[in-house]
Amino acid sequence: MTGTTAPRFDQLGALGWQDRALDGLNCVLRCVESVLQSRGLDPLAVARALNGPLDPVGRDLAKDFDGCRVDYRTEFDDGTRNVPFVLDSLAAGEPVMVLPDRYHLPGDVYEGRFHFHDHAVLAVDWSPHDSVMTVLDTDAAPDGGFRRYWTLTPALRSLFTWVGTVTVTDAPDHTDPAQYFAERLDRDTALLSVGVDALGGLIDELTETGLGPVTARALHVLVLGDIQPQLFIYANALAVAPAPGESLALPPEVAAVRTAALEARVHAMRLGIALIAAHEKPDPLAVYPRVLELGRPLRAALDRLREALVAAGGREGPADPGASARMRARFAHIESTCFPVREDARA
Image 1 (tube, rainbow, N blue to C red):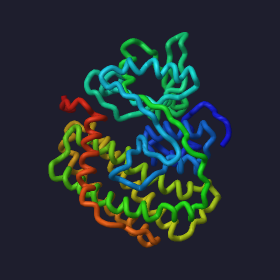
Image 2 (image 1 turned 180 degrees about the vertical axis):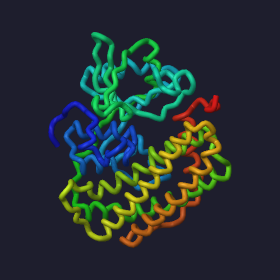
Image 3 (image 1 turned 90 degrees about the vertical axis):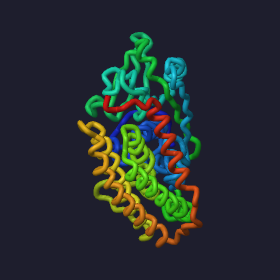
């Protein structure tokens, strides 16, 4: 690991970032990835630092990682209380991840309407002379380095309701892929098997009850924030995609699992992106049932990943009758933290 540099969003050096930032990771993970890169980790070490148990039920992809930690501070009722911490951190050269309350974000589609926390940016610089903060934002223009500039007016200070800093907690991991895979195989097979069934049960429940404005958004956060990146990070922790002209040599069973994980993450991304598009339709409640049909190919792809893990020698373990309830509780937690004010989104 080399020295520290300023974080930046670099599509060429990022994991799987082709057309959009949601290619594999989410906005939170792009921020964490940028900090890890700035501290000298190469792509494989980044993937393994971001990796963890292959657990769709219990793992939170905003904080549960093998080689790093994100420490959060929340002030949901008054984000101004977090501002001194953010400015002091930036002055000390410490980037700060901000999940802004979009109610207070100037020009945002939800400004003055809804208190949503479903996006993250990385604050990297502060100019006290003109009160301007520089943030990296996956939704900003690539030709501007994905940078935005916030003038810290009294009104803008209210959006800092949820902030966090990233700490590297372990040395870069360059273990041989076969050994890395084998050390986690039984654990990940058992956790994924339970998670596939629990996620399928949640999708069945939401299909039966129907998606509303909040549950639809919570589902896209679950799918794009946790399910898709878990699969993508896991595949890249086994081996990062080779550069053009290079080959990827893995044991056949590891390669089969990696391929199955990447295929499953594509189906997760399709469901999540379709939900986001549906939110903005004139009558989203009429569109959501058709979008939920994309849950079926996702479940089939997850079953193929489970089969590949078992074929590689992984043991599924005993059934977990409480997993469905934990998945539903987790979904409710996403509803209450990302979208704590449950207004009618059609208003």
